[in-house]
Amino acid sequence: MALITVSNNSLTAVTALPASVPTGALTLIKSITASSSASISFVDGTDGVVLDDTYKSYIFKFINIHPASSSKLSVNFSVDSGSNYNVTKTNTLFNAQHDEADSYGELAYSSNDDLAQSTAFAVLSPGSTGADNDSNLGGHLQLFSPADTTFVKHFISIINHSAGAASNNSFMAGYCNTTSAVDAVQFKMSSGAIADGIIKLYGVK
Figure 1: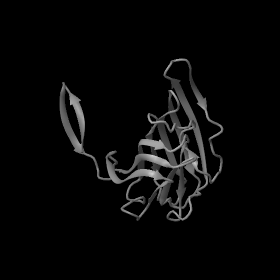
Figure 2: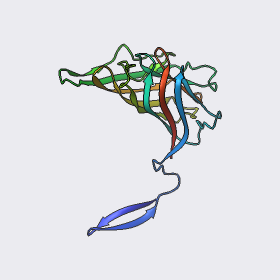
Figure 3: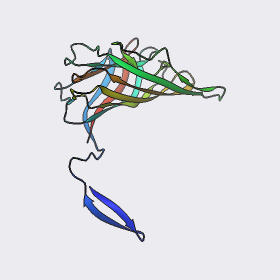
Figure 4: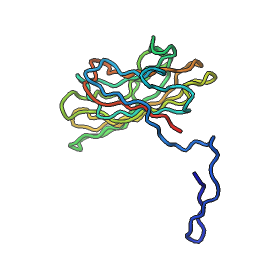
């Protein structure tokens, strides 16, 4: 990849970037399709999953996640290859909402769904995604340097989901308060199963 300069409306390639400089390219690692699934797990070294120091950042993409019953998508992390999903976390969460009738809208912090040094599953969207046929959820979660054994592990999530006749745009971020390598990630609904939908894992160059 070359750096580009513009001079007198012409483009000139200057030099190639060093191989150590991230380009932001996404590499698809694993795609899992839900089918009345109690949870969906990505475990390093299992079924083709890579979740180690191969990449400095990993992105999970949620596509048409539809719950079996009205509930919230949540996440937890593991440092023992998925034997336990109970990493201590602190996070923050807020939500923007607007309904189809244009009768209300709000931007609010969700104090009921944040965590402070908790091993519980972290909610990704404060409002429940409906189980009716036209309700679903889409978005992504990015996990930074999960294999690092010096620092805590940061994560950021943006979700849009339908709750009743409204659009909810949810923003969640936090960190796994551990210096152990995070080697597995699990997603599940706050109640009931994930009826259908796809979660894709990408490594970021």
